[in-house]
Length: 221
Image (cartoon, rainbow, N blue to C red; front, side, top):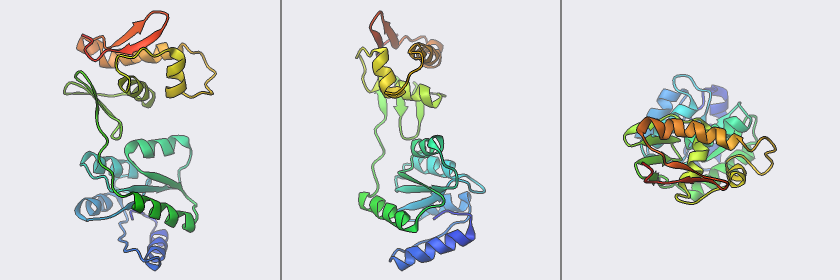
C-alpha cells in the first residue's frame, strides 16, 4: 500500500492483516514504485496525491515496465476526469476517500480473484501504433502527443480499419449518446488528428467519404 497519511496507512494495514492479508506500506511515490518493482505483490493499493511521485506516475511507470499487478487507486480527489485519468493510466479500480472499509476489502478481494492481466495488445494500422492502456501513440518510431478526446477518436477508428464510420456513429462511441452539441465537432477533431498523425508524415490515413463519414486506411500514403 502506497499512502502518505501515516495514520490512515497504519489503520488500513492493521485491518488488512486482521483479514488475513500480508501488507507492506510505503509513504511516498518513490519508495512505493521501488517496492512494487522489486517485490512480488499480488495487488497494489495506491494513493494519487503522493510526495516524490504521484500515483498516476507510479502506475504509468509500472505499466510501461510490463508490470500488470492489479492496482486499486485511493484518492481524496473525485470526479469523472480524475477517475478516467486513473483508469487510462492503467489502474484496475478506483475508490474515493472517504470510503467504507468494507467496500475497500471487497474491491481488493475482487481484484485478487481477477489476478494479474496480460498487457493489452497494441493496435496497429500500417506504421501507426496505439497502446490503449499506456495512452500512447506512435507514427513509425515517433511518439505523437494526443489529447484524451483525440486519442479516443483515433482508437475508435483503429479498431475498425477500412470501415466507413458516420458522424453519428462516432459521436455515440467517442462522445456519448446524450451529446446534444454541434455534430460538426467530429470534423474539428478529425482535422486536429490529421495535423498530428498524417500531415507531418506525408500521410492521409484518415479519409473523408463524402456524405457518408470517415475511414481509416492503414496504408494511406
